[in-house]
Length: 303
Image 1 (cartoon, one colour):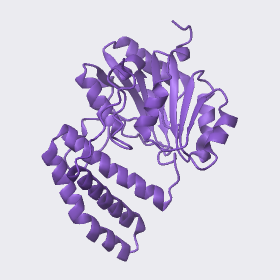
Image 2: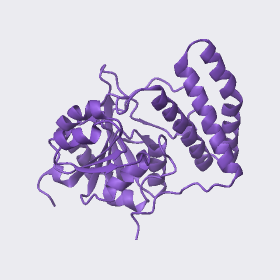
Image 3: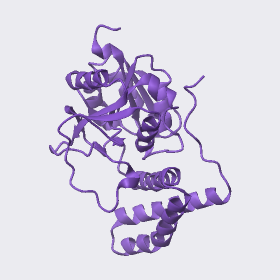
Image 4: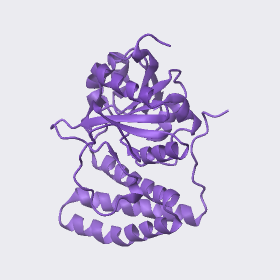
């Protein structure tokens, strides 16, 4: 076994148009000896700044954007340490808090994943664990962190410590989720395989949020598009085809009038969101009608 706890962990980051936050990411990662970064086809200076500011990282610079889950899978295929820390480029954790997460997994050998309590820059806690998405009805209530280590259906993927072998055994992330719901799906599949997912309130991380890519109209459209696509896939997978069809019917019926209304009201952010949801609904409908097969969980880790 490595003498230093940090030697047991490979930190994985996926970047996309993240040039503006690479300096702060470099400060976070300087303490960690094993780092793999996958850049998903950034067109800005992200990869150049990574080479300058984080020279010890193994950088995989892709020409295309294959999605968050698929990029993490590509990085995980290169991990040789017993643990891997998935860390968003706009998140940070120090070695002391990572050691707490390692201790939690050591005390709970049946657990496959553990997440800390993440905090926003304004000092407010981020929702870092919850029940399964399909158990939530209506608006989410006020978030309160647990007072002790506990099991959860879902852990926030912005800072997540995993057992490498267990992650690979379940096939990694399901790559049909391009963006959003991939952490929901991973946690649910880990639990189905008999492994607990834990929230550890003794450990703390920071997550700026909405800082890992630009906030241009195109980016907002794509994020909203993939949110709706991923939610449909998740409903299909965990609730059933009827629930997926109902979701598609709702967004297709509402998307055009809502987008037009918000455009008339000069609220472009909401107009873009509804237009993206409508496009996502149409894409799902076409793929379902043509019988396009949905990709299943990645098998690249298995013999």
